[in-house]
Figure 1 (cartoon, rainbow, N blue to C red):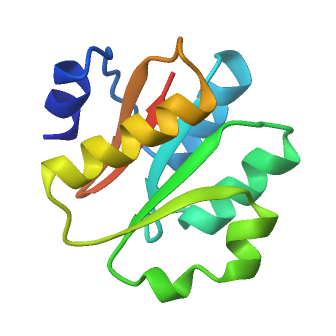
Figure 2: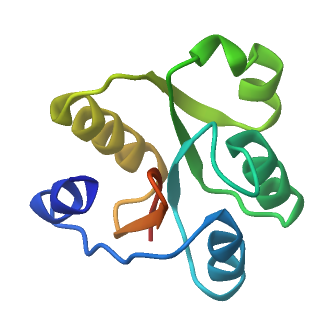
Length: 125
């Protein structure tokens, strides 16, 4: 569904396998925005963004989670998390959040979809 949403917004989706794949991808490609879940296999969303920030990645971060209180104000400020979206989410919620973040970060980004099992991790590239 999120890949379809990306396409409907004019972005080109690409599917990767897990958060570790995203780390490798960011090392080799320009990525403007990441939309990630808090709970994922191998790395949680906070761990993922912490590693990305240590790598010097400056892009925008949006979280989707069923437990928004688990992302502290310290995490939001320290990791420069732009938005935390509370599940369940509708298509319009996601689209509005992506478009708002997209306008903050870059006018020339493309959307990338990263899927790991039943959990989703999206990036805009």
